[in-house]
Length: 274
Image 1 (cartoon, rainbow, N blue to C red):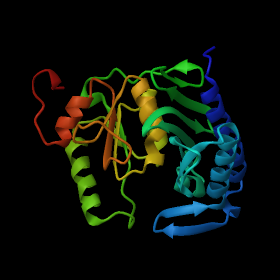
Image 2: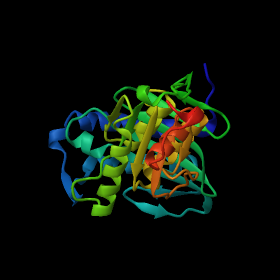
Image 3: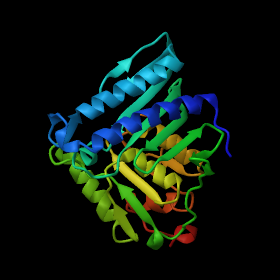
């Protein structure tokens, strides 16, 4: 059995405890009190409670660390170098519509570099986790990105801009990107959880994933898990992805360059051709 570090155990315990509460609330989804933050962007009583539970659990173990929370924003502790980056319910819209695809995502950044990450799907009891330079895992199984090299065989995930949440340039940018790739791939999926999309790339379930306009809490854990599973995470233009970048592309090593060329509108040539 793979031995998890004390740090990963702390993060896993927080995610699993919160996940049990979310499962209970998911069973009573129609009874939840829901308020709108904006069109197609909901916050539920379960979301707020989950964030409180994650924060309490992490604070108990590392009381000096700071936080960056989806709902609560930045909360500085005595140690500002270490920051917990938390999305307590990634896939809120799925959750509120009774769709069984959501997760808890917890990343730990040191000096703005993610050094540990956990993504937990409570309904499937799947814990994706990684530490910098220590590999990526699903529960106790080592993860590797897929080995596919042909675009025609590739299955990608993406996120579609919300109905009114994103401005016209963002929508047009996404449509251009989709048109660039959809005729060359085996398929494109939109499941509604950026964190799980990244985890699935690390597990080889998807061959790649791209999206625009994400927040650090959406991707902090996932980018590390993909990289530790042997994948590449960059901006769509090819620069290394850093927290706060405007867009993201995560793939295996064989498809990264061909996909960059597709998004850039360049022909596939030479070794990179499919």
